[in-house]
Length: 133
Image (cartoon, rainbow, N blue to C red; front, side, top):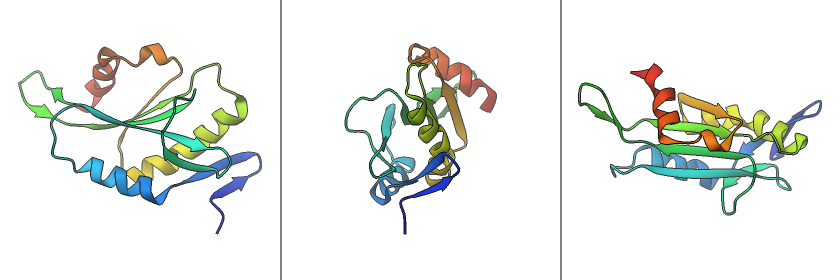
């Protein structure tokens, strides 16, 4: 079975099985600190894998300690897709095409995207999460 599905020129990558397990454990973690998993696409295998080095496009799953206005605390699991303007077009297409499969594999509902890595601040994330109160 191939690692990817190809529809015309759009390549949709599969999610590595070990990454799926890591995401499942991350989803049910007991720690209360902020934490993140960075993912990337292995261009040769056309497979979404755990990030081991910095690249331009990124997939991030972030567990954020969110304190609501009424004092309640929740730990939303956020999926952030960062695709800066300078990315190569084929890389942008592969990441964009694989995003939904990864979101489904990780069972995430809070999905955000940015084209500017400088936007990735706590204030930006709080603004994004404001819609989920």
